[in-house]
Length: 162
Image (cartoon, rainbow, N blue to C red; front, side, top):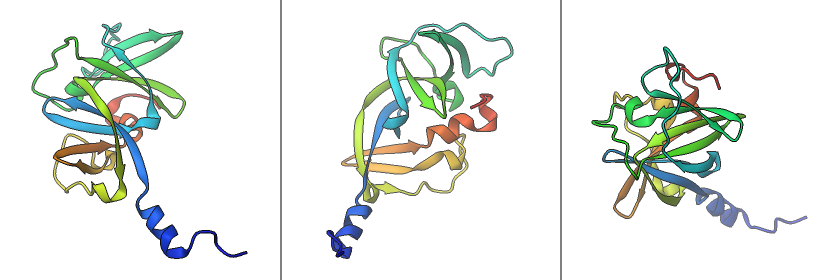
C-alpha cells in the first residue's frame, strides 16, 4: 500500500510538532511546563509545616483526601522575595502517579510552541539542574524557560520521593 502522506510532507509535519506549555512567573522570569502534567491551579493557602523539611518545601495540604507536598519554586530558585498575595497560586501537578503542588508568583497563559521556536539552553552554571531545562522558547518578544518539571521534582536535592 502506498503512503497516504508523501515523505517530504510527513517530514515537515513531524518537524513542526506543537507542544503546549502552561506559563508562569517567578520574579521577572517566565517559565513553561508541559500542560499535560498540570492537574489544576488553585489559590495559595497556608500548608501544614513538616518538621525538618527543606525551607522550599512549605508543607502539605489535604486535597480531596490526598496529602500533597507544596514546593515554593521562588525559594527553590533563590528569587529575591517570596511575597504571598492575591496573584500567588499553586499549580497542582500529576507526576508519575504522585501529586505535588508548586507555588509560583502568577500563572500567565497556555502557549503553543513548535520545535522551531525552542532553542537549546546555554551551558551556564545555574540553580536549576541543566537536565531539568528542556530549552528556551520564544514567541514574539517573550522568552520562556521551559522546564521538565518531572525531572526537576524528582531530582535528589528536592527531597521528594516520586
